[in-house]
Amino acid sequence: MDLSNFKVLTFDVVGTLIDFETGVLEAVRRIGGNAAQDLSDTTIFDAYKRGRDRFPGRSSSAMANVYRSLAEELQLPADTDSAEAFQMAVFRWPAFEDSVAALKRLRKHFRLVAMTNADRTAFTCYSHTLEDPFDDSVTCDDTGVAKPNPQFFAYNRGRQAANGYKFSEILHVAQSQYHDIGIAKELGYTTCWIERRQGLQGFGGTPEPKQMTKPDFHFPTLKALADAVEGV
Image 1 (tube, rainbow, N blue to C red):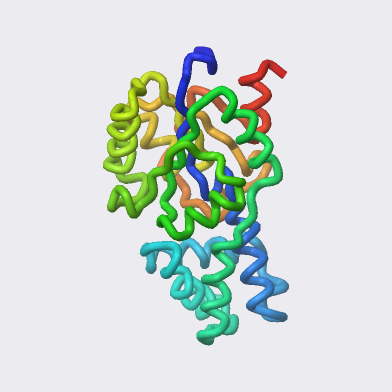
Image 2 (cartoon, rainbow, N blue to C red):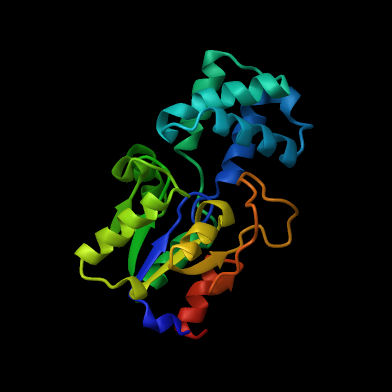
């Protein structure tokens, strides 16, 4: 299988292009003060995931409640100002250091499409952080569901078909085995796993999948994907 056979790259955004794990850790330790400094990354991520499970709504509004849940569990400040500060920090989550440059390179060769569980408000912030590389975007506001719901992927497939692209011309690029790689592969998408946590234990801020799925392509970084496309 040759990367040059594809015309469309669809991207998971948060976790693949946007480094939400760094964003979560920075915000919790800054807002939580002294009480948060000795908490391990795993402790914070586990509490964050439990909070997100409790409050799965739109990321531009639900994250204040996610923080309250996390803070109560970890005995951190859980006042309104702290929760609102965490909510605002979500819009400033950083890009991975290779994301912007790699996307610029990939855009020379492919149509770039965002497929994100972020809502339109949050996605607008992330797209700006990434220097607006996308030709098209699909958010949870568009689909009414979130990945790994198969309807999200079906919506995107139909949208790209309406723009003249065959299903076989789409490569789905993502970090999350849980949200993306497993279900996309099951639905017939060709997949590219960007293993952002290569060499690290556990699944960080991402839910653990029931089983690992072997992707069609596998790279440790987005830069490595761009290098492979350009034969570097």
